Amino acid sequence: MSKKEIPYKIYLEENEMPTSWYNLRADMKNKPAPLLNAKTLEPMGYEDLRPVFCDELIRQELDDTTAYFPIPDEIRNFYKMYRPSPLVRAYCLEEKLQTPAKIYYKFEGNNTSGSHKLNSAIAQAYYAKNQGLKGVTTETGAGQWGTALSMACAYLGLDCKVFMVKVSYEQKPFRREIMRTYGASVTPSPSETTKVGREILERHPGTTGSLGCAISEAVETATNLDGYRYVLGSVLNQVMLHQSVIGLETKAALDKYGIVPDVIIGCAGGGSNLGGLIAPFMGEKLRGERDYRFIAVEPASCPSFTRGKFAYDYCDTGMVCPLAKMHTLGSNFIPSSNHAGGLRYHGMNPILSQLYHDGLMEAVAVEQTSVFEAAQMFAKVEGILPAPESSHAIRVAIDEAMKCKETGEEKTIVFGLTGTGYFDMVAYQKFNDGLMQDYVPTEEDLQRGFDGLPSVPGHEC
Image (tube, rainbow, N blue to C red; front, top):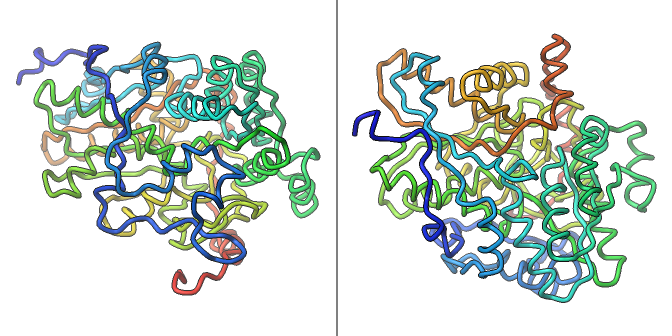
């Protein structure tokens, strides 16, 4: 197919939107290990998780055999406000790089939250509302998830309490104010408002916080308030399920033009956007129908894939959540106050962790100055200011395209552009002023996190 026959933006029609979410676990030979009770080390079932999570979300979290979950009409109608999202051919970037590679990106920033997070936020808020709950609590890193959840809760009339990682609370005041505009309360974490927050501040005075800290505070708050449950923007299997709408749309758009990608790239923090993007393609790989190369891109400052351990760990710093088997840096690991945005979680989604452990995908860690160099190039030629998280994927997409230039291979590269960076201008200012620095944790830094890993017989790392 000639270059002119493929438009800059491939749109699906409204009636071509997915009607079901795809559960990748159904096609996995090696299923992710179950969540464990942190005290008894026994697998956690439905009743064990009810004090923390919404009922229907627990069913989705625990189900590793059902391949497709129908998307309720109310959620699909909400999706229609900003979905289907476009798959864009990066012609201008290809021209800039003078590469024979064909580059596509799935753009998820066309909504007020500025990111893909709204795909799961409306689903989780919907199930909370259907259960008759008063509200939900959550954490947020760079603020995309908190923004998305506040939007979803406002739409459905639910209360929303957000614990925002302190460094992001301070660096991104406008994203914080969007949450408040939608009616959410926003607390910098760790805080003095919870028992676990006070304990963390006592152990780590002056800390800039982490997602693990914020999760602990959100869970404590939810379990102490009648009619509230905790919801999470990444890491959990249920979130990756909802985000599969990204990959399903991407595959449908590519199939329209007979395009088969060689390489699929996504940024990786907790894993929701990466997992959502690759889900249907990985399903084909697992079923032996087609082969693809998958690359997860993480910040060198928080390298849970490339330098972490595949082990059971606490999902939060306060150690109040279940244990999950994942690639982790240890729940006590607190990343530097860098500008990697939401890619600051100490662990990785259990599904993606198992796939990586089984050698079905690759991972690369990149430093933030090179990430922002790629972001700047992309903004200049493609006209979108990308989020710092997304720019990790852009960095490696450019690197892969340049390899094609060296070898003359005409590979097709697809990456996820998770959202826009218009609320990340402090980071861009630091980069433009030449003040941005790279930070790579030492072995000693990592060992302090590993020292806190729980001992789970039969699952030693």
